[in-house]
Length: 85
Image (cartoon, one colour):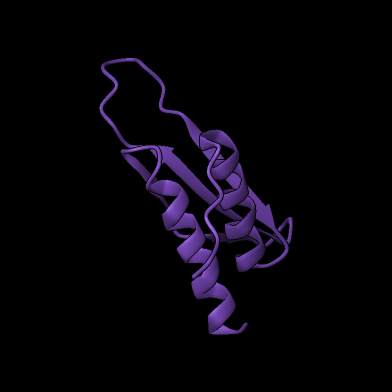
């Protein structure tokens, strides 16, 4: 996988994560049984006892596709478009 595509996808994720303060992204994981990559972001703020954290998950056939899918979800949530530099 080209490093440029991976770096551009991560730039987009970090740009999208800058909008909702307190959000964090986990490293993408390959789920071999489904042959799909999953990238997850969650609200890491302390919301208090018993309150669920909001989370979003991007899915794709490749690591980059999963990251781009997650970036799109985060951008839709915030209304921002974070283009790669």
